[in-house]
Length: 522
Image (cartoon, rainbow, N blue to C red; front, side, top):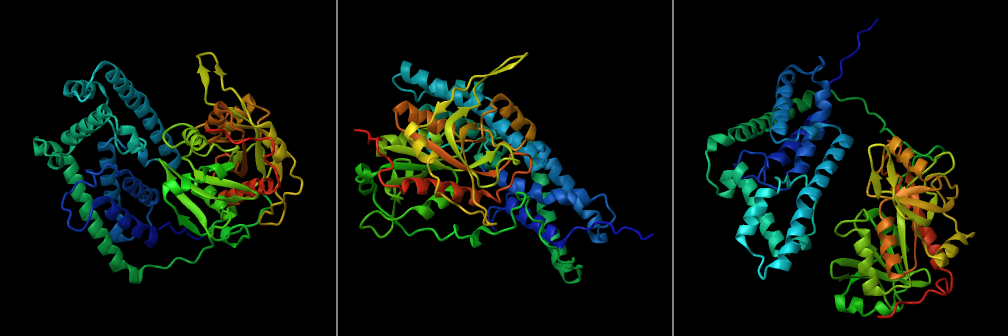
């Protein structure tokens, strides 16, 4: 009976750890401050990269497969990094990606409820009650009541959200207090340097570890055993769908030529725009742009800026359209709700359409890249949560009857998946909420509550509410890219985005397809 060879770390794993530590530890070559990027508000990505590089080595540290020169060294590096993480209160971020994503989401929600909303309310009251709100005493008092902020874990805010003088003053004051309390040599605040010795010692230890690791790896490279080549593990695919590369597919062509124009020239074309097409990710935007053609007597797609939004103008089928990308989700700065309000005000379109990606309901009845056309959007977030039961209070928003008729009557539309099988089309209610779902139990609870729903996504509730409020016809067509079943990956997102916009383009290519939908008056 042969002995099992113990697992050993690969040279690539050690190189990745060295690279991660280098990015984490220094601003540039001349930096001598030993605390790992602590003075930066964006140290989180560097921390997470180190955590990801450490994780596979952590699993190996109890084995006997380490070379002698690494057996004691790597466990000490891991222990130092763990101590640093817990001293910052970031122990939860050492967990796998799903667990730490949930932790960051909880921290961001706590930030919104305990910091963002109180400050905005205070600013509103000050505007109403004071002629000048640049009041130091008010700022001091608010800083005492506002809980500490972790600038790394808080959501990235639009700078326009902080233009209010009171908000800006409190934000800066709290930031100065944090830096003064934690890192006095940077902020210029006073304090006993010995109080901050732990961060400094840990930082110096990691710097030494990085240098030594880089030297050891360089010395070991010539003699390191080369592992046998292995085939990359294919992504979990739809049953029957062969492995494929998006760039090899006929729908994945080059992006069109784009010409930037001045804002006033862009807005002067508002009377010509029939449709605004919304996307929420780069993949969705690129899929839409591949179907966009230059306007009449133009040689390229027009790109321009209208206030805080970016638009691409061209012909989408037989219609003149504006394509734009909002942020993921229905609420928050730059989200679908606010972006739709802006587009309606600027372009006064005859119709609002959103295309993109969604999760499917049932892999036994649906397939990857099947297009889900929303007859209505059901916001599942509004709830009354009691001890005994949870009552869902989301009110469905119906899609435009005219647009739904056009999308429902498209028998000649076809779009081939990589195995050349045709994509299907499903019409029905779509769930919409702020959660990026990848949990079978939660998904099952949603479809138990809304059995008629055919899938779900994240932006429709905001878009539908804004369009419905202003009386603008809307519809949404999103294709299935995954099943939200705990095995989510982005491998099918380009395929799904292309299938969805293919249906939109097919419908809008019909002559007089928007008959009965009038352009809004100014």
